[in-house]
Image (cartoon, rainbow, N blue to C red; front, side, top):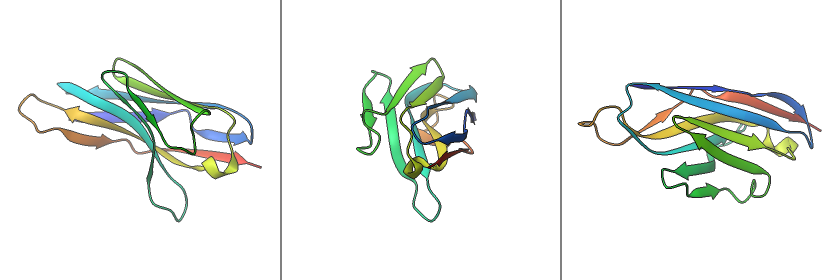
Length: 119
């Protein structure tokens, strides 16, 4: 199985920065894509950004120009700049891939890390 552990969340003032990390471990055969999602209180989980094996990046309109996703082997990072109170949410890491060669492609989720942006 694939395990994901996020870190880097916390409390920051509006205009500040945070960097989230997500390390994938366990039995990993292949990873197709890695990404970040977030869920604010009372709202549905939404896509923040993804990065494919080919390096293609996709960003939600609300974070374009402020957030940057990067990846080093089985770790994905989210650099968040110019944070706004509306960025407050639990941020979840997601990996799409296979644990074993015989497995279907699956989505694996981390437990989330809380980001709070004060005004």
